[in-house]
Image 1 (cartoon, rainbow, N blue to C red):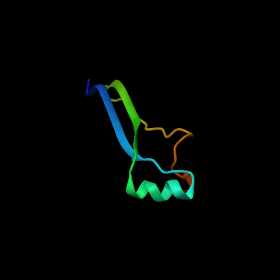
Image 2: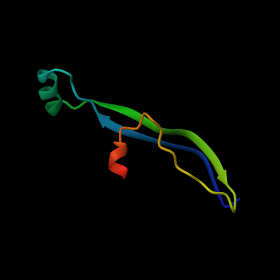
Image 3: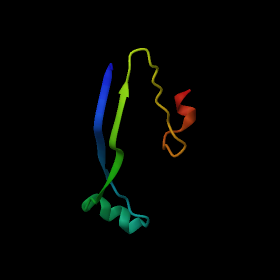
Length: 68
């Protein structure tokens, strides 16, 4: 085995924004954060000679036109 990963996790802290004008203004004074889990206990092995592809799913927030 060439590469082995076990129980890899990654969490980002993202600022929440309000939906009303007042909530947006207050969010600059009192920041509220939520945790977004990008990876949660991911494990895999890559053996010599194997090809790996990273796939971006449909729910991604990146505009597909930007990657061209």
